[in-house]
Length: 315
Image (cartoon, rainbow, N blue to C red; front, side):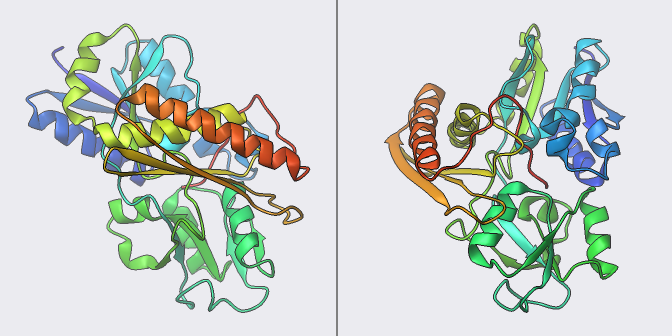
């Protein structure tokens, strides 16, 4: 390969991520260029993604560029990547994870507890809605779409008392100072893959896979494999407020998952398990086991599992 071309969305955060991968590859001796693209997920800002196509809206155009040979790899926030990739594509690399937690951003309040009764909190993530309502059922949760800068601007314009964002994106863009409080997993369990970067390639490009191998982080890849297995087995539905988060202690991988009712009518269902994980197959098996327990708990509470489409979760 004379030049490796990276397909990327054109938001500031997506470009940071692509440039980060570019710089790592250049450090390994490769020549790298970027192909900036706008996806349908970036264009549709007036409706919830769960109603217009889910995660695939953020990756389809990038996959077309890979298929047509205009790019060799696509860099994604892993939580935006569908649980099942189209035939002919593969996840070739998962890089070391940034901070996986959710963050409260507010210009007036230093924590969730400080928010007054009925405060307006912005998020379009069904997962965050469900977990916020479990913590503070009095809050008024309003939809918030757009890239990270757009959401911060809407907060600064006075439309919200606080918003909830992924800490990773804020830190990557040098905006850690906007974080007023980070949510611990006990309060707000992250989305599957949150904070991790995934690199997608065509399955018939072993040369590109080999070039990316030095960038892979084995423990992050195992953790997100377990998390994504939960989402895949639960159906990954846009109408399913689902969280999954895994961490290592030695060779033991602990996995937690939660399902919530975004309307707050049903209690939160939570499951946790751990297993010795030495490879991705072990991680996948742990995720499948947790998903089975979670599914049983949801159905026992009278919840509904909608299978078939992809879950999405805001940055």
